[in-house]
Image (cartoon, rainbow, N blue to C red; front, top):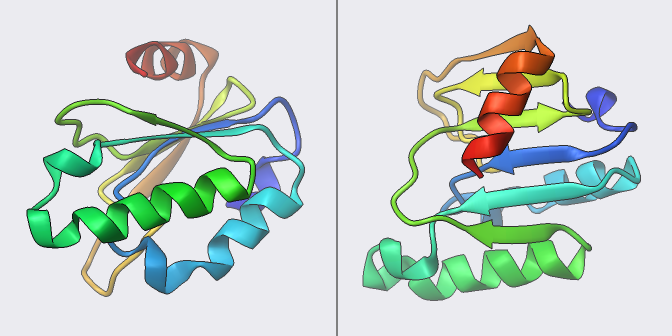
Length: 119
């Protein structure tokens, strides 16, 4: 997905639980010199056993100059890139697992604006 990043930036709703095992993906995102904002659930919305790992993931993103915002009880998984490209689906964008997940690419300024307004 990094080939879509070089413009104005990206807004990503993400589930961070598996991010620790995919840290190399962060370098790919930040190497594109895009402004990136990740919206995720706050650590307290995760099971207590995962909260420290979630805090670590948020700190890791912030160390890479990625803006992190939290939103209570979200489940949507999408990325808005350059205010016109949308990746939307069931895949956890920053923490892909082994399960069968899907994502679709849509090019629409209207849909991008609507999703970005949810953040």
